[in-house]
Image (cartoon, rainbow, N blue to C red):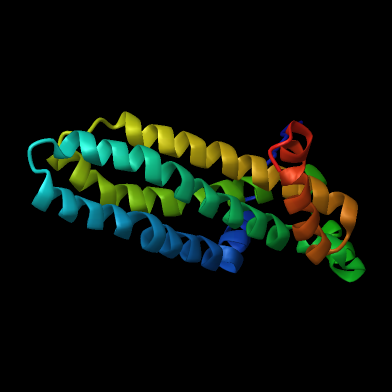
Length: 194
């Protein structure tokens, strides 16, 4: 007797990627427009005005500017991905159809989560490839990129998990997005920042 437990469904994964690839593409474009392009503009500025200490200036700009822009794009993408991947739970016919397939609910959840992780990481990798030439040219440490990647992954997964959790309680996609935003701001209310 073959005993096999799988938490992943390859067909469902391919379906998720084909269905929601555009969120990842839009995220990559936003990262390019709001993160990579300003960084390249700063590179040109520092090449003209501060050629002697360009490495430290660029590392400082990347650390201060990109650490805020890139995770915000990741959070917005994660909220959209969660709402789109689990939208079928808000319609009785879709739930009956999906849960009638020979796929367990555990496989559904883990496959959707892995799909979201892949769709969140791809835009960062694309933009990271664009930054790498500049980092190599000016001998900037790769730690700066890894710190940005760490923040991006942590914030994106936290937003995805929170939005998915809120979506399981609300039963409405619009309410899921609104309440996940409220839940994300809740710690700021408790600590008194807002």
